[in-house]
Amino acid sequence: MVTTPARTAPAAPAELTALTALTAGRRRATVFMACVANFVVLTDATIVNVALPVMRHDLRIDPAQLPWVVDSYTLVFGGCLFLGGLVADRAGPRVPFVAGMALFTAGCVLCGLAGDAGALFAGRAVQGAGGALFSPAALAVATAATRSAAERARVLAVWGAAGAAAVAIGPVLGGLGTALLGWTSLFWLPALVCAATALAAVRLLRSGTGPAPGAGAPDRSPFPARRVAAACAATALSCGALVGVSYASTLWLQEVLRFDAVTAGLLLLPLSLGIVAGSAAAPPLLRRVAPWRLAVAGSTVTAGGILALVPMTAQAPAVWPVAALGVLAFGFGAQSVPVTLAATAVPRRAGLATAGYQTAGQLGGGAGLAVLAALAVATAGAAPAGAGTIPGYRVFFTGAALAAVAAAVLCARIRDPAARSEIPPVAQDLRPVDGDPGVGAAGLRGQPQPDGRADPLAGGQHGGRVGRALDPRHG
Image (cartoon, rainbow, N blue to C red; front, side, top):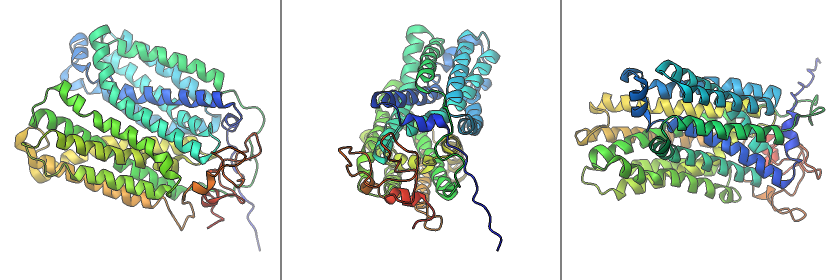
């Protein structure tokens, strides 16, 4: 009988495996640096919205071209994410992180110096390319600088909270910056932040020396494609529902309930605060329930919150949509942590998996809004606008709720018996060992830690339930 030799696994970048050897303080600094990068790249997508009228006036931008101030950033960012993930996997996180930050800073400078629309669009495209280069590396670095499943869940919660805060505070920072310092400050200030973050990365992310653990070893933990695909698809649907509801709720508050822009913005704060609260609640919940169960429950709560918006009338009090937004946002935040874990817990291809996950969120958010608006026009005759288009709002919210339900179904696929790639309850891997509350009771074969233990999410032949679930040789 002819036997096929085991495929040699690509080595995990030595820079990633070296992060767990850092002191606790330096690991926290590394996570903070990565979250700052996430904050910057997400804030930049929304910070210019409030300044668009001023930019149009100062640079004489044609109204038909004005959307390109946003689109030239988001389209390049989404289109280059996979390239950024591939570079992070092949070269390690240090090169794409520092280079991406430098490119993003250069884009900020170009935008700040722009004297016409073409220069502004070009600068925004450079920003998008830089963000796509460092963003996958940032999440890979943040999760690699952890020593346990519990610590990784907490880091993902902080990561999600930073993203939610960025989305919430982007328009506020844009308004304040434009009013106090002018619209160019929206680019000069991020340039300073990125330059400082790049310098921190040079110091914290040392170049790897020598082969990474596992280099040349037979690959017995294949890429969990089904689990990652299910997580990415769930992310796309969830983000599409969230972006759509955020858009329609903004119009509802201003066009139907007649609140001014400032008041409407304040009333939308529960949307971001709910995501932060849900992300914070996820880590302790993951000690008690399987990640896929938490993801399904969170998506179900999200769908319920959206459905509560469907029967609203023009006479509904403002507390109705505000409360519903808080509920659906909490569910979204709670499901985002286990879904992110499922999509990115890939030791040897973390950068590429992260890029796929982030691309799914970007494309899902943009496509979801377009699909929901088209659905409202096709079935109710009008997209959400004033009080005369309430049927359009109802179709819009119903479609968003169905997307959240579909996301819940896909979250159940994170538990994939056929591929044996479920990520089950982590409680048994979080029991104290030698006074360390964050490391599992059984050693796992994976990236070794300074004390000889291994990452509970890396899979292995001797480990607890998380390790066995990620290793297809175990049931």
